[in-house]
Length: 67
Image: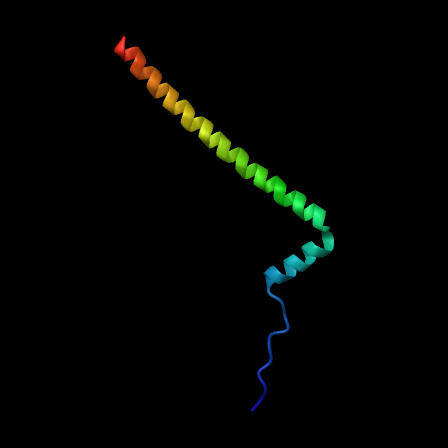
């Protein structure tokens, strides 16, 4: 019987990571990761602002009806 050999071809993900490692230095990868984290944090703060605005509008509506 023939020997079972491991697949010598990398996955697409492995290939993309290898290309990224060649093209980008560690500092650039870190900067890109930090930028993405910042984008996510900005989105979270924007969502929090919208929710706070809705609460303030609801409280304002109740206060104006009570007077």
